[in-house]
Amino acid sequence: MLKGQGEAAVVTALGAMSGTSLDGVDAAVVETDGQVIHGFGATAYRGYSEAEQVVLTQALGQWSGAEAEAAAEVIEAAHAEVLGAFDGVDLVGFHGQTLAHEPRGRGTCQVGDGKALAEALGVPVVWDFRSADVELGGEGAPLAPFFHFACAKWFGASEPVVFLNLGGVGNITWVDPRKAAPEDEGALLAFDTGPANAPLNDMLRARRGLAFDEGGKVAAQGTVATGALELFLQEAYFSRMPPKSLDRNDFPEMMELVRELSDEDAAATMTAMCAAAVAQGMGHCSEAPSRVLVTGGGRHNPVLMEMLRVSLDCAVVPVEEVGLDGDMLEAQAFAYLAVRVARGLPTSCPSTTGVMALVGGGTVSEPES
Image 1 (tube, rainbow, N blue to C red):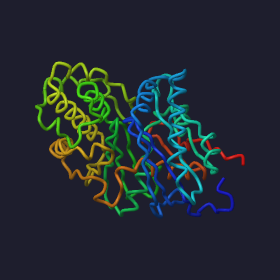
Image 2 (cartoon, helix red, strand yellow):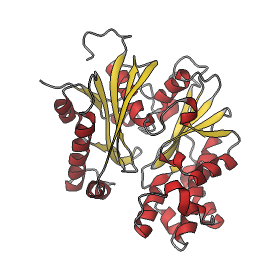
Image 3 (cartoon, rainbow, N blue to C red):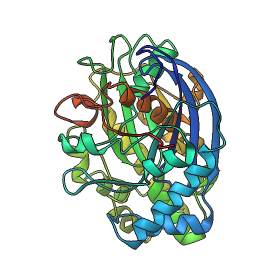
């Protein structure tokens, strides 16, 4: 693994992420020794076709069987296409596609064969990042916090900050950059806050044939149904102490709560649900952050961003404010984590996933040729 390179050598790693929003594959290069970020490289995006999205949507919630196999074929082909366009890569971090996530039950399921991808690309591939964490009692998510810690060091943060990822599911990482390492006590706290874009996207796709609420235009025309919002916040998940994580479809009652509302009011209410879940989650932080850095598709929704600014007692800004790429941060995270796995460094700890001990999750597959 990483032959001919010393333990502290800088590696050119390529990471890929296909999230629960099912829009496509993000790919990004990070130059790192697995601890310090030395630079960011090229990025690419490969969107899924409508037919591919149908295959992936049908497989959600499946642990095996024909639908899961069909989804795996889509994932492997799409990743081979976008990742194969990169040159000069030492290592690939391949997350795959999460179909089901039940850490306190059946475990976690990401489809996509990293060994097959290693053969297709001709470079080592690190994959199956979550299973080891779950097997040791962890939630298996979120996994980006160790990378967020490195990012805070990279842009020179001197006081606590929060990274807020608003993808299909929302999650936060509270980072104290005054600590020396991410596994140090008090350096990190991470957990899923609640549903983010996925339920809203599903509702708009079903009602209007829209992929998402572009620019928050639908929500901006509606009024929040406070009764529905209050019922949503009574969900038992919000009373659980972190670390904790969610499956994409863990809040089916959201659809029921807005079923009788107009499209506009439903969009406004579901957007408010996402913001309220974040505000509730922020109460778990041991120290108020200096600012909240928002990544993921949700940062492009001005209605959601304004709701967050109103409900939080600190600045709420896109991660671009500190020189990071909010569209590629998760892909970059798996590039960074791949190097940590290859070098035997931990990728999660009790304060990020609830795992019993430091764990470096991931399987390394070398190409045979």
